[in-house]
Amino acid sequence: MSNAKKSQVNILDIKGGCQLEGEVFVRGAKNTVPKNMVAALLTSDSCVIKNIAHIVDVDIMCDMIEALGSNVRFTRNHSLQISASSLAQMPLEQTWAFANKSRIPILTCGPLLARNGHAIVPALGGCQIGDRPIDFHIEVLKALGARIEIHDTHLEMFANRLRGAKIRLPYPSVGATEQVLLSSVLANGVTELSNAAIEPEIMDLIAVLQKMGAIISVDTHRVITIHGVDKLSGFNHKALPDRLEAASWACLAAATKGRIFVRGAEQMNMLTFLNAFRQAGGAFEITESGIEFWRADKTLKAMALETDVHPGFMTDWQQPFAVMLTQANGLSVIHETVYEGRFGYIEAFKSMGAQIQLYQRCLGQISCRFANRNALHSAVIAGPTTLRGAEIHIPDLRGGFSYIIAALVANGASRLHNIRLIHRGYENIIEKLRALKANIQEE
Ligand code: EPU
Image: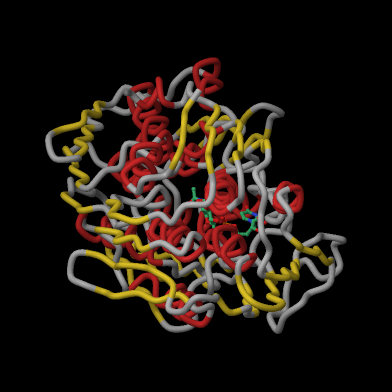
């Protein structure tokens, strides 16, 4: 079934109560591949990205690259070839086709400004997990010399050639760090970015840019220095495996008392997750080709954790982990410090019988930006609870996967609406669940 067709399937019926066992394959990460695709727009040479997952976010980027007058095609063995020998700014009306669909369009400013001196970006999409402002992006582009007009429906910007600058981010934002990297590689002079994000996804983008001819150093204390160059060339790159998807399957295995081998999962970018998983009573075995996950003992253990920027516990691991903790013995505490609105999915869990209380207070050690914002950003989870099947509407990507876990753990049947959101970031989710012998039915 094509991705377009898949994303029309929007309801999933799940019968809970079985242990999921078997193997799934994890390919290139949703949060790196589209950025590698943007990097390919910085050169007129041909670029190849391997290990591509067929997910909606990659499809959106393919459509956008074509709309910008460049060429993109899937080749054998899950590879993608991009050739941006010409890069034309699409007319404003055409950009609206990409409005509210994804966060990636704003990252095309760097390539468009470098090659055309002009960029138009539609209103952004992505998961509704808080305000998700773009002020950092605007400030860094201004600092690099872009002239920006802010309209209700879009941003328009101009620059002859961006110039290097000293920039300090108010928070180590992944997207704003990528913005600086993609905009300053072809700028005139040196850019020094402090308080930068240093997630593996950022390192992967730096690796791609280095292959293209960029000079970028990652220094101590979150400083990244970019020496602007005049020209970049093509690259050939194997995409980083999706550590968020791998962690989702790990939590599914432990929550359902099953055993799942995640082929393609890599230990190095999951160290923090693996520590927490083990503390909560999960077990794993690392091999060269992947990681196998299961429960160490009959019962899982309650624990306290805080999400944070890398090398902390990722905010995207939080939701599947929270469902797993509903099955743990005792009181668990989660302090979400990256997004102020990332517990929106909890209400539906409660309707399934989960005992979770949300707090505006910071229940943790990390000094957090949401302390005085009336944001429900701490959760206390009492377990173990017997969940019961329910009819639920999926609010966002990671929340969606956690509902699948909850429905598989629950007694009885559940109906999940809005399943198409999950295709944004999880490849072949239905086929993978079937391979693990989940009792599911699409509508
Ligand atoms: N922020 C601002 N202003 C900005 C940009 C960010 O205030 O201009 C704030 C955000 O509101 C948030 C914090 O900074 O509170 C961190 O946001 P960041 O910019 O790091 O997030 P992002 O780049 O928009 C990416 C991933 C997210 C992931 C975060 C954190 C992509 C497409 N998205 O978002 O992934 O949670 O980094 O690691 O790469 C997901 O995969 O489900 C997902 C939401």
